[in-house]
Image 1: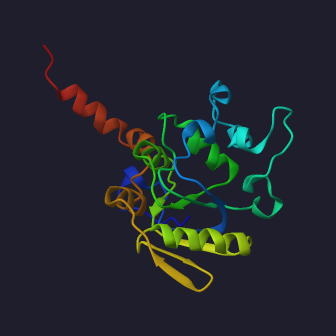
Image 2: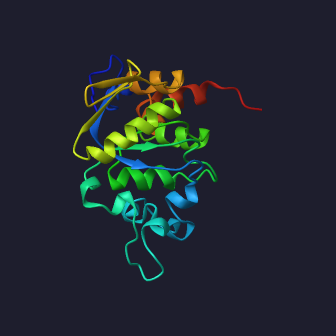
Length: 209
């Protein structure tokens, strides 16, 4: 994740996310929903801290909490920061715990065929890009990650490209998402705090009946 100075005070503490680089982990399958990503029973938490260990829990462990075959249980993918997925990833409920859990597991960006709109929005609020490419390109990338678990995937949000192993593919980044990430405007909570005085001044100037 790259960051650079912003011209306005409101965004000076919010890093621009122009570029993400790291090794990948392939998660295959369409329509992977948020209940699979973080089962509901693990959402009874006061903070999001510690959620990472429960990512994909029911797909990773049996009823006796013994590990099952799953990429996120494999030692070779433990340092991965780019998740490569298929279509409609993050569908289902709107729980923000899903990207929170994956971020705390170590994921910084997603490359896939498609993402549920609310999931992508929740990722944006955390500064995590969700970039898309066609099925063949994603399938090739997933296979490359399988064969090269230590290889880097370079996600260029601004240029809308993904580079890996000497290959470059064009990806799509939602325009609003790209602008927010590149300009450092993605953290709406930080923006509101940074603009607290001007917001209060505007509120004080509004006429009330």
